[in-house]
Image (cartoon, rainbow over all chains, first blue to last red; front, side):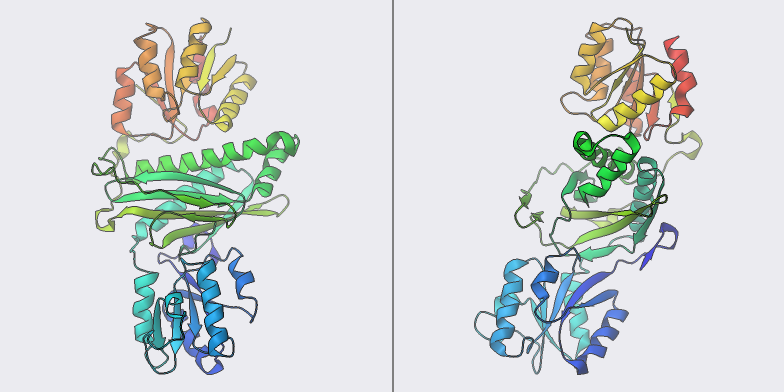
Length: 325
Length: 121
């Protein structure tokens, strides 16, 4: 899945955790995922919660009625997952009916929808409703990747940058120890860009570049991530927002919620988020660091109004060069 | 007495620009936002060039340059914006305030060094 910007897929994918142990149904799920821009992830029994605590950026969970060996155990596992990660849609495969009716007490609220193996078309509709419900213009996906790659190249010299195909998540986990948030306000979108990474790999870069100790440089990690965020935001604004009225005069805001204990952030909306994952590899040591970039358009999303700002090419000055007045 | 005042809330940018210009033989001081920039400019009559970001906390760069020309009545110091912004409206506002040049980040020192040297000469 990993490749450079030039070969980047235009269509986002999403990862599904598959908690369905039916061998007879496995090939059907695989074929369904292959055909619907989904990546199926399997997990061994008993390791579900451990996996959910890792950074796998999920879009949702495919479950089956008998998972765990008994109806009681199946209900318990589903309830535990739902309690730990309420943002993740859990879709249950049932034997006879594509509804949530008749599930054991306490199970219904854990699931968002049901399907049966004989009607995978119904599952597609559920996936569209819960995961691929927002349309992202191809030009926007390409543009974000280009902008971000360019900024990272300018700020972290000597690193080879690669990125995965963009993906859609409903996960709310904050990866690593460090993240930045930047509001994005335009006539066609209102929300946030979030960058997430881990401190140690960035510290290593700074220590090596400045030839000093980690203790004195840890605050500089914040500055570096802040500047990277600022540069991406600026380029995004110049390319897609321009001088137009930023937000159609709306003053609506919702609180953001950050829970450090659970490494969790809520943007106050159920909308899935658009994500990019960049891997930066130090060409001299081959050590790498990962940067996650999320777009949560939680306040407004009108992709029909999306447009790239047309610039007067003749008057353009390259970034870094001076335009004299 | 310094020749150049760098005004940017990002220490990454301040350090990068300052180091580059000092290595080129120029005397540089820095400020963390527009308010700090005004204070530093008032206290150092040797400053010939201010290089300022636009988006900063407490006081943005365009407000600062307007105050330099207006409230401080300093019409001599040269003003350059170094920013992620490239909107025509902002550039017009800068131009009206007496800004001489506009650089869109990231900073590429070699591309502007000769101009900086002329502006402090």
